[in-house]
Image 1 (cartoon, rainbow, N blue to C red):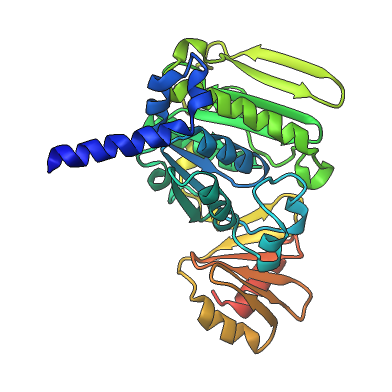
Image 2: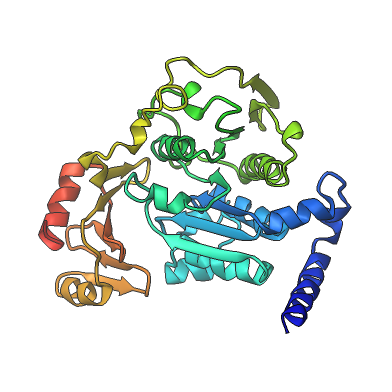
Length: 351
């Protein structure tokens, strides 16, 4: 009986391998590399522009397990560059990871998908990285990137960095024990940088950055370490510029890869209040989970409420909007003022 089970399993795997026939014809991957991919697990943090391209590439390539996490839901302005979403997702206000899972499950049913609606913080990052072979950056802010960088170095997991804004992009893969870390190149996350929400972005830049990330991920996952790019690539598509900077040696005073202090993993109560750059949105992270049905009734007495199984939106009489998530997060949309956001939160949610 056991021999029969093994034979059936081998037959199913052989049929699954047919999907990747053209990829296996590429000699640096081949059948051996494909089988390695099918046994690997990756985490994509952020399922916006970069994350959707990354997930599309890796799921189609046959990476065995793809976990992806995002705190946001689909809006109309996303559709210009976030390739897995459509107008139906906007109408239903689906969380991005839920909408992505719907699409990706139709693309490759042989890949195990693990969608997680959550904000990545110092409290949960270790659990999210558990059992992962590689982490891919699909975020839009350096606060989260530094958190991922520090957590990856602490746990010894490679981290592929990517950024896209305007017509510019950059990408690198950072590998503990083999390269410097992200902090060796960028020391602070002061929020003064330009973002897609302040100066825009064109979709082709996103595709190229994520493709750079994805190919370095494939190299690492099939163990083609000699082919890994040991540089930070930056480019401007509109102005026809391309630069490549060798990673070199780590900074001797780097608090992450050299001093092992991992500053982003130090829990700060201020993390409960986060301004989402360029979006007139303050995210407030509560200590307790939220029962959306209960809050639909409560907020419905004072506000116009729209809900689905994943989130609840309440249009307040003051003009702002609250968006509630089951994990305890609340977005206060329509203001960049943390004090104002705290006031509305206290008024409608409590403290």
